[in-house]
Image (cartoon, rainbow, N blue to C red; front, side, top):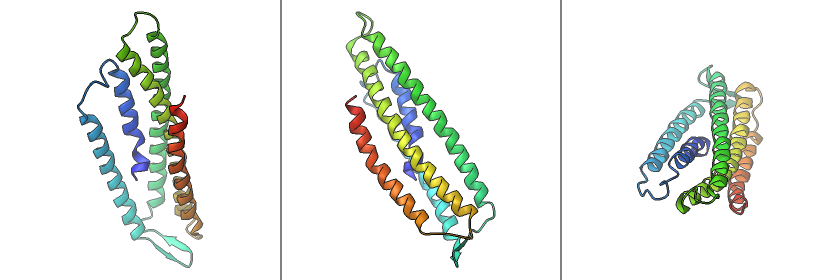
Amino acid sequence: MFFRTIIVPLTFERVLATIFSKNYEQQKSPKIGIWAVVLTLLISIAIGIYIGSELNNSSIRNGVITFRGSYYGLYHIIDVSVRLVIWVICFAIFVWILRYNQRCYAFSRLPNKHNLVQRYQFAENVRSSKLLLAVGIIIFVCNLHFDCVMLRIAYNKDYFNVEYSQSFDFVLAVALNAIPIAAIWFFNF
C-alpha cells in the first residue's frame, strides 16, 4: 500500500525544495519529511486494513468470487478515479517544477545572478525532479495495472483466475527493479 500512496509526499517535498531553494539543503530539521512518511504509512495501513477486511469477508466458490457488500465495485471505481486525478495533478506539478527549475538553473548560470548554493540547489532540483518523474510514471503504471486487475475481479465475479494475482506480482517485481534502473539512468543526465 505504501507503494500506492508515496507519490503525494514526493510531490510535496519537491514543491518545498523549489520554494525554499535558497536554504533548503542547509536546514537540518527533517520534521516535514518525517511527518510525510508517517502520514503516508498511516494512510497505507488504513487502506491495507480496509482491503484486507473486504478480501477476508469474500469467498471463492467454484471460481465465483463474492464480496460482503454490493458496493465493493463502486468503491473501486471511486478509488481508481480519485487516485488517477491525484496522480495527474502530481504529474502536472512535477512537470511544472522541472520546467521552472530548468529555467532558474539556466538563469543562475549567468554572471552575478545567484550564489553557488542556490545554483547547486536548482541543479539538484532538476536532477531529482527528472528522477521522481520517472519513478512516478513507474508507480502509476503499477497502480493502473493493479486497479485494472481489481476492477476485473470485482466486475467479473463469475470467472476468477489466479493469473490475475500472478500478473500483479510480475508487474510489481518489474516495477521494483525498474526504479533503481531509472535512478541510475536519470542520475547521469
